[in-house]
Amino acid sequence: METIHKIGRRKTAVARVYLSEGKGEITVNKKKANEYFTTGPLLYKINQALTLTGNEDKFDINVNVFGGGITGQAEAIRLALSRAMCELDPENRATLKPEGLLTRDPRMVERKKFGQKKARKKFQFSKR
Figure 1 (spheres, helix red, strand yellow):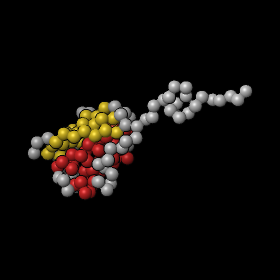
Figure 2 (cartoon, helix red, strand yellow; figure 1 turned 30 degrees about the vertical axis):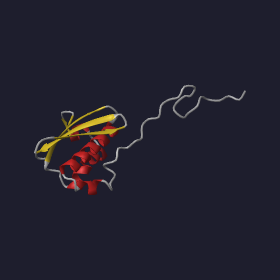
Figure 3 (cartoon, helix red, strand yellow; figure 1 turned 180 degrees about the vertical axis):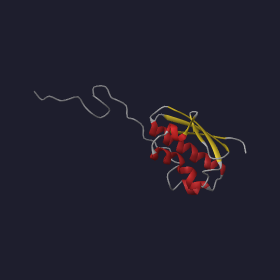
Figure 4 (tube, helix red, strand yellow; figure 1 turned 90 degrees about the vertical axis):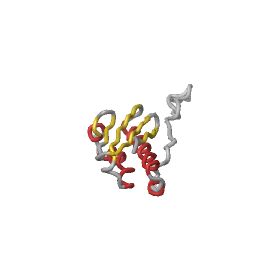
């Protein structure tokens, strides 16, 4: 099996995932996954696609991720891994689609408008 390469995005985070046969080691930016993502929920997000398809210990995963915050990066990795699982076996799509793991979250930060303090917030109004 050759290496599978997939990209996932979330907000401004971009994750490039390289999937190859191995023992289940996940490397994120040349660090182990549990060193890069220290909290449980973030590690759960990364492993979600692997556990649903039953491929936790079958592949070595190398991830390059940049941009955004730590949560956006974890969700970008999750999307890229889900896409890789679907390329590996098209039957995985039926498992991952109902969980929403193949959907790119379209929510982005709204831009700040001129004449306003933030995107929606206005400057303080003084009647007199």
